[in-house]
View 1 (cartoon, rainbow, N blue to C red):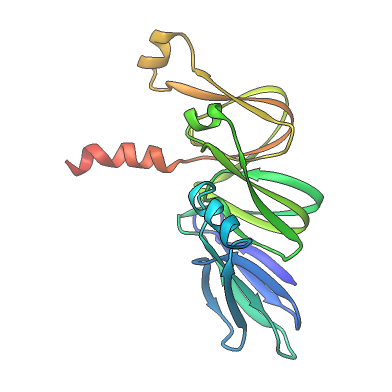
View 2 (view 1 turned 180 degrees about the vertical axis):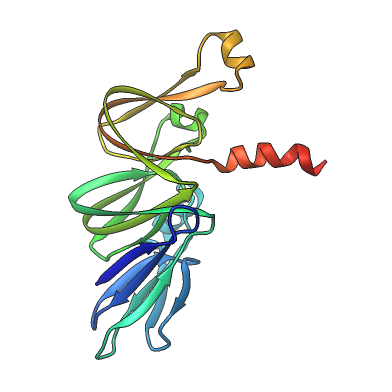
Length: 220
């Protein structure tokens, strides 16, 4: 399978070439174009109950699409996300990664998607009460609004609320004020997320909540 992320960081999309017999799993609204003779099968995202959990707790769609090349030659498939921004490709080799709700775009069939409790700190920090866990062996694509920034953490690191996109297992999230009460209120920062542990996190440079806050006064 040949894949390439193009159009980054503002308008990223995934250009894919499926060889005969290959399959790619994607969010139900991720496909933008494809070869006419690719086979598409819609199915529950991990089963009916699991699909419901991913939709209402993990911010993902109830259904996913399986794109399979049953022809005798390579076929093209283009995928994207609903918001303008960057897309990241990650290879997992038996490990796992946590994603914020709505970040998942596509994966190869060897990966499993599950929903787990993220903690009240994640909920208060506007990262979601539940998190999507992707585990197994295969290739994963996820994205978010804005550019994606990688940070290697050893100890503690502060991330503004609604900006944490992905993080590795073993990392814990805690919500705190940006400073003292007066500083937190008047600086405009308010609450922030303190990430603790050792591993890699991915941060988005923009957030949808920030966009909404910016737009609301201009629409009145």
